[in-house]
Image 1 (spheres, rainbow, N blue to C red):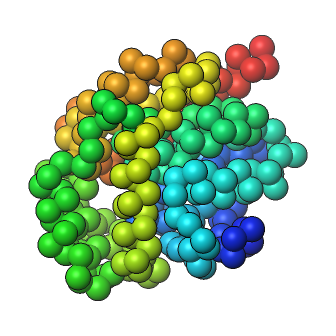
Image 2: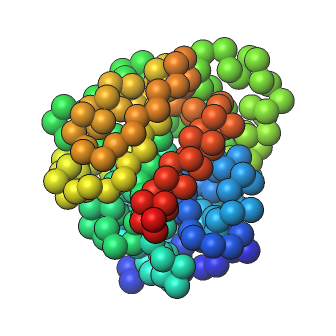
Length: 276
């Protein structure tokens, strides 16, 4: 089912909920929405309450409100979890920009978060590596295209080399899902600027304390380079790093079976430690 959450600054957030039990909150990346988590929702909803938030301005959410920043989107996520607190803290999963939001949420509202999973993401800061020049140049070249044309032009670079060629029907299905509710250019730009600001400032590892954290990252990531995963693993005390050799930025789509099993094992380990 889809629930609507009105924020205090005028945005209306669409939240897609399924299953029962402890919540698993999925936070999407730059320009993406709940469609990008289809493989995870189908896997987890038999054991957990899956909660997919369309970030402000994307998917079925309406309006940008007064600001689009990573801290603001983290507050949006907190509002959603506050409505689900009858089932306890959530396993929070963020991909790319969604990981920035997830880490900020965990730092600011740790009581809402049972565990943190960062996929193809970063905790930012002065040593973080930004988007490679080849990718930003492609995005800039496509900036004046329609939202649908932008998706067709830029999405292939987020997969490992050759994935779209090897999986043409699946790629077309993903494009169709993305184009069904395309992210308007002003929203994409606002999110991109929010990401740049986040990567500069980052999250202080001390604010994450001993939060159980799983980092999943492909070595062929052309949006958030793999060294960011190693940096995160080195700076957080309670982290498990899962490296996916040869996987691209959208590794949770490319290698969904491995990623899902890794997350499930992690969630269960966290739950056993919380309730021995």
